[in-house]
Length: 309
View: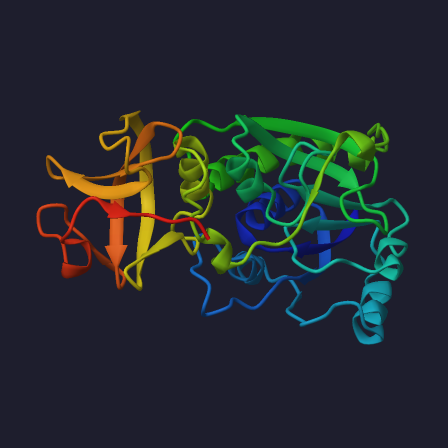
C-alpha cells in the first residue's frame, strides 16, 4: 500500500484528504493547524476528518524542526502532499519522500504564485482562476506541474464563492491525477516563472477603499475581501463604514461631486471618479447594518464626500 505524509488545512485540505482516503492511500502522519479563534472559519475541519478516520494528527507551530522531521522519517512515506497548509516546508521534508512531494495551489500556475491567490485574482479583475498540482521545490510554487483545473470567476463572485469553486476543482483534480501518481505514469512539465506572477499575504488593513479608483476596481476589492473575510471599509467624518457587498450600477448622479456616498430610493450608492456608480448592498457602521431610510448622524448631510488614502 502507498504511504503518504499529508500537510493540510482549509476546505481544499479536507476535499483532497477525502480523495486520498477514498483511494486507500495509507496516511501514517498528518499535520494541520490549530484553528485561530480570531479567524472566522468558513471551511470544514481537517482535524475532525482525520480523527474520524483515526489518523495520527499533529498541529505544530513549526513542522521544520528535528523532532517532526524524525517522526516523518519514521513514517517511511512514498509521497508527501501539501493541501493549503500554511507553512513553507523545508528541503529536508521535500527530500524525505522518494516518490515526490506535491502541493495543491489555488491558481493556474505560474500565475498568482504565493499567498492568497484567490483574493488577488478577484482584486485584479480576473475572470478565471483554478488549481494546480505541482511538485514542491525550495522556491514557493515553482516546481514542475502535474495537472491543472480551471474555474470561472463571475462578475459578482466573492472570495468565498471562488474559494468553494477552487476546493471542488481541487478534489476533481486529485481524483484525476492520483491514480497516475500511484501508478508512476504522471507526467510533469517545468513552469515558466517568467510568464507568471508572485503575490504576498494580505492584511485586514488592505481592505481600505481608495476612492481614487473606478467603480469596477472598488467592486473587485469589496468582493475580494467580503465576509467571512475581514471586509472592505472606508472612513467618513472619523467613523469607519464597512462596505461589504456592492454592484456596479449605471452612471453617477452627482458628477461634480464624485466620489460621494448618498441614499436614493431606499438604497445606498457611491458615485465613483470614472463616471459610474456602485449600489452598496450592505453598509455597516460599528458592525451593524445601516439602512438608507434611517441614516445615522454621520451620514445625515448627503451626498457625503469620499476620499482616497
